[in-house]
Length: 164
Image (cartoon, rainbow, N blue to C red; front, side, top):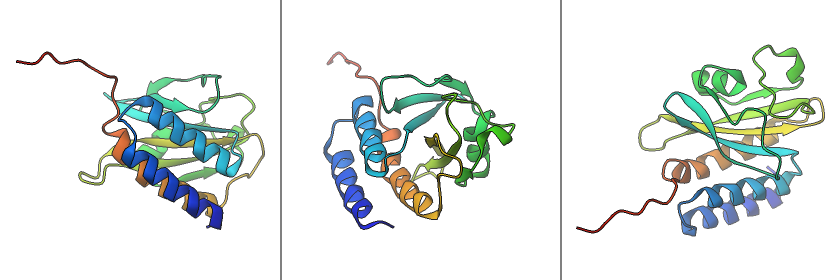
């Protein structure tokens, strides 16, 4: 793994450990990952009631599918296999649901709960270049997914509970 990526993983771990449990924290983490590797787009999808729901994405443009059934798309294939998927040319894969129409290649990494082994969501990274992802990206992003697992299972909208 690239040396500067090891430093980012340390910084990311510190952020995720210390930051509040909020969607803003996951967005900041996604932005850090995107900037580290100059990825075009990084999205974190959370699994809720059988659907993938965008928890955070980089940039200001939302993906085409902010919510979709767990059984669909490359994300669905990853949830089923529980293994990272690298697709060098997404237009040749019939499972592809385009987040952005300019995407040429994609890597999707499962985010698995450490304590229960359940799929919590996926880390979805996209590129406008064919065959943009390799084993170094896989290694890096799988480490990121482990770090995100703790925040993804706890990141919720703030809710006020009346004291009794």
